[in-house]
Image (cartoon, rainbow, N blue to C red):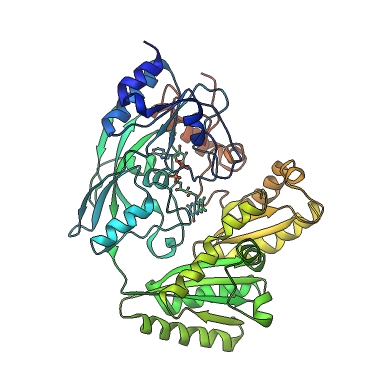
Length: 474
Ligand SMILES: Cc1cc2nc3c(=O)[nH]c(=O)nc-3n(C[C@H](O)[C@H](O)[C@H](O)COP(=O)(O)OP(=O)(O)OC[C@H]3O[C@@H](n4cnc5c(N)ncnc54)[C@H](O)[C@@H]3O)c2cc1C
């Protein structure tokens, strides 16, 4: 029997895709990576995932796990050899249970994030992870990249939102770790090892997630700012004055919003005159336990003082849920506008907030010196010190001429991040995009420990090879 026959036996013939049917799974969301695969396999249960892994382990066939394929580092795309199997988790999409008293829910890895948010809402609870791709990314992908998004400031990343996991190991065994405990000190934390491992250690098939009370009301404000220093000043003011009610603080450069309005003319910036042409904007969200009116009044007081002190040039407070959604839509459209306008070089970096001003000023300057005319496309989750510090073709550049210099741009930006004590991957992971850069910035001891973990959990090297760590010869 061939390996393909084994896979058909494991999941049923209709769920082993080849040829044209497999094509949508072989290119990443940004269309930066394309690969080939022996087949795309779509198991419908944990046992079927385990059977697929056992068959692949026996045949020495690499496995590339895939959720919604919205990742931004090429982690879910196979290489060009055509030897690997893409294992799509999309059919594992059941909400298994919700326990409102324990504030937890158990969901399968292929559940789309938005479906999970809606199921929690239906039970009168909040599952707070929120990001632009939430209509198509999956919980398994969110876990495997330790996704962040817009609510990290208040609720933390996916790691902090997870209590337990069910995992199929690289040998095809099932680890039943779906605990719903907030305290459990019984040895090494395997859960945290699998979260953020980008499919290189095993396959996550289900998770126990934390739930929170639903806020009574949410209110959003858009602020116009003259400088990044002012944005940071406003962040500390907002943290102090709003405390735990501050659930979002997003930074966007004026150029980013101009691109959104250019690409999507139905959207508009709600400012006029000088405030419509400032270099920075911030989107703030308050979650209130009293009412929308209460949230709006709190915004009015704090933003009124900030305008008086000169820290904020102008502000618009949403007067309704529809207006709040329109403001969020501006923010969420930035990656789409960026994609529509060409091929940017993306840096998803984490910087201590206290070093942010120096980082942006010095790196902008160094980039202009080295690559005159390039455009900076800067936005991100300022409340978490996370910037999407992207570089796009400007005057005198084409997509191709900029991409030809990608390694030089990476090195300049990442060296600059390293110099201020930052991280070259805040929330998107490493995948294939940053695999080689990782070696430049991680301590040798840390890298050696990571390789030991990989060797111990995946001795055959079949789990998503070439992602996060380079393949080493055995
Ligand atoms: C418009 C847009 C906005 C975005 N905004 C954000 C944002 O604000 N914050 C953020 O963090 N990310 C963001 N992302 C990136 C992306 O959505 C996240 O990384 C998301 O978590 C990926 O989920 P996915 O299901 O699409 O995973 P995929 O892309 O399918 O896979 C991502 C990685 O996880 C592995 N994997 C997937 N499922 C499993 C599994 N069950 N077991 C083991 N490994 C698995 C894959 O092999 C791959 O390495 C954005 C993307 C887009 C397109």
